Image (cartoon, rainbow, N blue to C red; front, side):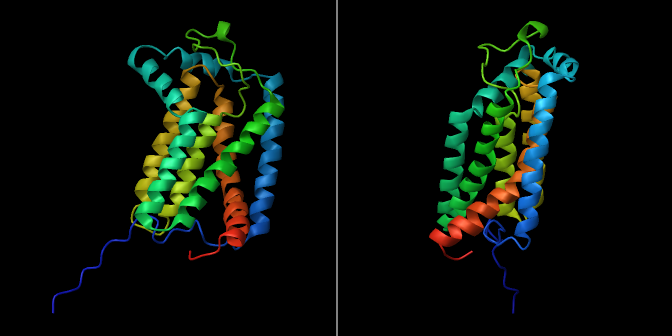
Length: 232
């Protein structure tokens, strides 16, 4: 008899985003320590912008097609578009996978990783790179604080949430590659635009990577599990 061919698993079919964290205490401790350390680093950098020369050097590349591209990246993942992208991806997950809890988990992980970074931004209140010190200052000038970079936190949170969905499928490695490229593009874009110091962007990557597991724990294991129980 001919061998029976099984359909390849759909992305997210064996996702880990709904699996209970086996080490919740450790996950929370890591996240709390990360927030504390990164916040302290932010205060230190506010008083000592040691990476201004890096920002100036990268901002010098903000010309021609590259400058237009990095500016477009910044606009494309601003707060408004970021919310829309997250919602659209969540809806797509719900329709394609037929599991709306998984879609809600995805959106919640992104939100609970991203939104608290804005609170730290207000608390630290690090000024953005001085426009007068840059060769190609961004226009219009952004008046909110610089540390951490909300754009960077968002894209890393989006990638991490997507990888939770793809874990256990044949798409996981591709997701890692594409996600890594997206993160690098955003990190370089916000610095080339002169909108963030390099430390703003790098701290944002660390924030999302270390906080996302705790965001998943709180949202999925505690909130969804209590108010929306269902299949994993």
